[in-house]
Length: 411
Image (cartoon, rainbow, N blue to C red; front, side, top):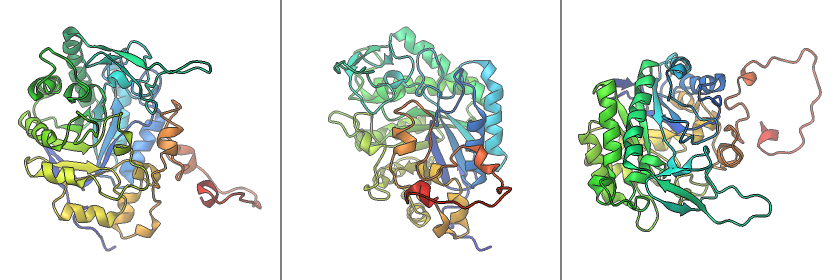
């Protein structure tokens, strides 16, 4: 069969890891692990389907290095104990079975944790109001909103958590993952330290850019000591935080150079903190590729691969921005929830067969994360559900009436 989109399907090196194409599943917490943090059958099935569909690099989202102090969702994956290695191994093998490279993102949510409710770690003391986050203030029927208080981590807390991050990375490496990612975007804990808006500290972890970068650099160094310098580390961070006093592109360019100097293998460039959710969970009216200004600017100052995401919808556009040198890889999340076979359909010119994400944020955010349930998709009812793959024809023909022409009726 003829193959299409030559830029999109060229291999790329990330450290010593050769990724078969330029399509990356950027980290997504599907909230389907067991309550003890062990990867579930749904985790394995969902991520293996992404690999089967042709995605080259799959980053498993939001794996906590310490459940006791922070889970980003009530059922996120964890890597804070050796007993979790077998489940992580099943997850890595499910991805690698189809030729994709398996990466796992380590994320401590800090102030944005779904669990525990209180007390919540943060870079700085503050009272916050984030009604769209799983860490929102819990309001009962006859209460008024007062905001949720979070507490500043002590130096001892920070040093302890650095070790927890690197222990978690070692477990993921032992489980067979090809690389590890760090979530330093969207207002989660590492992001809280890096952000000039969220970090109000006056010690060696706050103030100047050098001090605000100290936490993430100590984590990187500790991972390299335990896993070796050849184990690729990918860092996701927000190019613009979109709040007054937050990080802007000029500082993000410096951050990219600092991370490359520290030995990071690739940069996953995102947007926003949780005070500016629209830039990170862009609704349907945002134009395709609106974030490529950031990857274009950062690519000019680093030699390591740059991944860009947000509102990337069509194979033709993704191939175009790679060919024009605006990014090295394209990051897809919601589009792959909607159709895990987007890559293979694109490769063979079956663009019209792609089930298109409509950026509705229904199953992947409102009815999942906000309600503390596992992720679903309003357009793809089979998302993560192995029972759909096992369906057989009815033994006896039936007459069916479809009532309603919405996504479910059309499906």
